[in-house]
Structure formats: structure tokens, C-alpha cells
Amino acid sequence: MEEERLMAPAELSEDGEIERTLRPRRLDEYIGQTRIKENMQVYIEAAKGRREALDHVLLYGPPGLGKTTLAGIIANELGTGFRATSGPAIERAGDLAAILTNLEAYDVLFIDEIHRLNRTVEEILYPAMEDFALDIIIGKGPSARSLRIDLQPFTLVGATTRAGLLTSPLRDRFGIIDRLEYYDTAELEQIVKRSASIMQ
Image 1 (cartoon, rainbow, N blue to C red):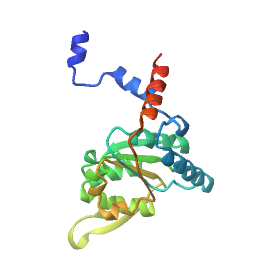
Image 2: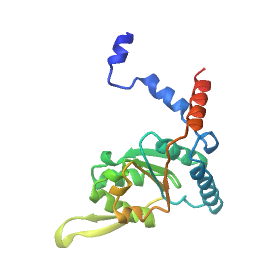
Image 3: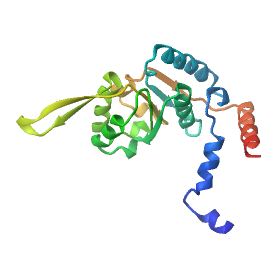
Image 4: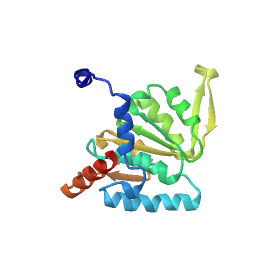
């Protein structure tokens, strides 16, 4: 049985459960990235105080530094819903439209590998980020018409390991842009100790 486990390419259900248990859920549980955490706390409190959606957030940096975890924490701190997807998974404009129209007010939409979004899909995202609206073309040729669908206000959190591959129009629509740094030895030690204490 153990031998099968070692060879299995798929994640087992208990693996996902352990990972969810170990992930920090609040900013004060998140180790490292001190500057980002302090700034994010201010941004979140300001958005909650104004009763507005948090500015869209772009997180970039090498893999494994906690971009996905931080996106989940942002939703938890805001007290909103959290939807996660990835750039390559959103193949058509209709896929993105379906996701956006199903968001509740102030939800956090997390798009991992946002630099891999299809350009057509990315263009649909522009008015959604700026005006909380979708512009959809119905029909073709001379009879085509444009339809605008209002969306609930939401926060897009995009994550990428390749910030240089983002187009300027997309990057310019993020109000908060943060680079995650590597952890130092003391922070890594804290992370290991925290995980070990949870798993006991």
C-alpha cells in the first residue's frame, strides 16, 4: 500500500486536507513578507471602512513563496468569498464572464499564472476591473450590438512568477502591486515550527 502511494502521481485526499490545515488563514499567522503584510492590513482596513472593494492586487515573485496563501488570507481578512482559478484554465471569454457574473459583492477572485491569460480573455477583464462591468458583443457583422452587464464590485488578486510577461494595460489596472521576497533562515524555521505544532 505504501509503495503504491509513493508511485501515485495524483494528490491523495488527505494531502489536500493537510495542506489546507497548514495554510495560514489570517495576516497575523502568515510568517515573513513583513512589509507586504503591514501594507495589506492598512489597505484592507481602509476598504472595509469605506465599504468598498479592495483595490485589485498583483502578487509576483518566485514559486513557493505564498502568493496563493496570501490571496486566501486577503479574502478571509475582508470577510468575503474566495474563488480561485488559473490563467490557462480560462480559455474563452465566456469562461471568464461566467466566473465574474457569479461573484458576490466584494468577493476575491484569484487568478494564478495571470500572465498566461489568453489576450481575448484579458481584454474582457479590463472593463470588469475598471468599471465592474462586462462588455459583450452579440451577433456578427452589421447586426452586431454591444451589451454591457453590470457586475458586483470585486477584488482581483493576480499571481505570477513572470511579471515581465504581463501586458502594460493589465498591469496598469492593479492598484496594489507587491513582490514577494525569499524567506530568511529565521522565517523558514518559524514556518517549520508552526507546521509541526499544527500536525501534532
